[in-house]
Image (cartoon, rainbow, N blue to C red; front, side):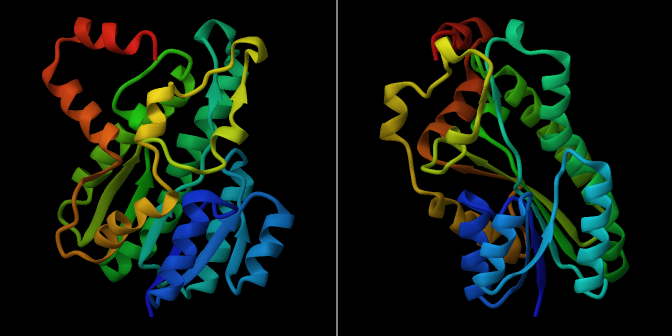
Length: 256
């Protein structure tokens, strides 16, 4: 039975993925940040660890626990946990930006490097990241979050190249608007000018289960894709970013 460690399992993509993969026959180690959420996961039959990606000691402790639970035989790491700081860049402090990157990027780097040796030892594994449509195109009010996802995209590209001579595959899942609690947990820096998805986004919004076919392919296919774009708007954004001039993209995105 292959073991998968999934971060950010209190709700949304992480929880849905943990449940689906457990039913699919994988051994799941699920992480969350709060003890109350951990208890809920335990009640659902999951092996769990507490993990706060913003805390290097917590990351180190969680990695040690995962390696102990899996007896050093970890097949996959699904870096899913994260949060968003929304607001105009002029309203975001250095401390807020550092916290955004600490959770969404620095913690991912530290956790992956702590778990990667186990995968290298068995010369097999998958490292999968939850990115975002704003890791492809940046929009006003989402600058901090978008920057952290842009960084994750570049980091994943380099990691994939550095592991090219191994049997460890690195994949990105790039969701567009999904019906999760993510937006409810966003840290808004301007309460009187809150950043919200445009009305048209509702047409493209999917349930978190939409991620599952892409996740299964990333885990199980001999040649997984480098990027899995979820929702039509994400696919459209990726094509537009590649084909349209920057100034035209600015006109399209400036009021989004």
